[in-house]
Length: 331
Image (cartoon, rainbow, N blue to C red; front, side, top):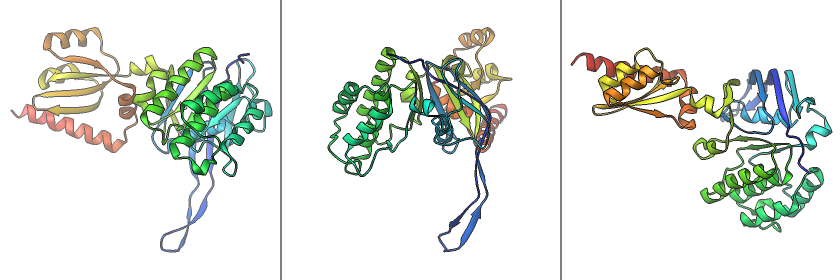
């Protein structure tokens, strides 16, 4: 039986962590101010698709994913999770939590018990658990379930977490940086297993990762968090339309790029590559062909980096661009 995929809706969600006291290296005690992890988040997670959750360190990704799994609750705002037409608040809601599987980097295993015992725990907890799939994946990842988690390498622990996330077949499955410690062959095997099992048993999958270039092929939707806010939430196709590159002779590229917001610039001798916001129109495309300038699409990772660059990075890029233009004008 394949359950209906879960979606989610967040309206003006704020999460703040209270002030805390900590000990400095000098032995003195200081009080840190309360921090805001999520700041007025509005977001709709479409059911039945694989969504990438991207953001720099500290952007609020893990906080967001923990909310969806009822590991935490908002300070304010509204959060609902469930199938279409039946969204419910997840906090202390047994029906929702039984159908949401969050896998964190640690794997959330019972450290004092053998891995096999953790698997039994999840088998009892998840109504759609597939023991045959779990066994096959553990063989694929070469995990000895007779060992305790502390005896496993970081990569093997991550592989157990990945197995739990897939075998649970929860209507909402969340992987939060679960690939950490895995070597490249294991990561790619994990990605292939996600796609294969998703095709046979459709559900909603959220995948948080810093290895955007590796995982972008999985995504249909993308959510980008930046400093606790949703910078964008859209399909991959829509995000890819947010930028393009021009590569060619400096003067020709400058003429075509005039009036567009520049996100990044690289120069090698007489050739320059600029990353511009938006999509090229027909006029720009014709001008590029006539001038021998190459128009390129941008990988998701490049767009993510450029769109979330800090003001300092943006100012540096603008200064570099101004310097190039000034040097050209002075010749």
